[in-house]
Amino acid sequence: MGVPSNPRNGATGLGKACSGSEVESEGVTDLQLRWREALVMWLRWNQAYEHVTERMFQVGHNPAQLQEMMDQMDDLRREAVAQSQQLLD
Image (cartoon, rainbow, N blue to C red):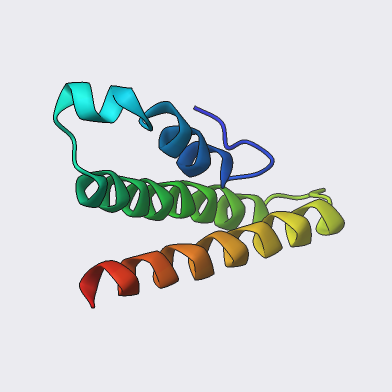
């Protein structure tokens, strides 16, 4: 399973896929959906982190592409931290 160029897409897609009447019909509350989305963000971050650290040690990797992936990971991590903190407050 590869890491997409934007690791945030997985979390955003889940939120869209489980919104509206689908959520109510499945008995999933908004709070449960928010927890699920936060967990998915952390899992996506972890997957991207593993991918980036593996690439750091490969010969011939593209430093600009690696930096872009790390910047996206930082954005995802910040968003996951903020959402997790809101859920814990």
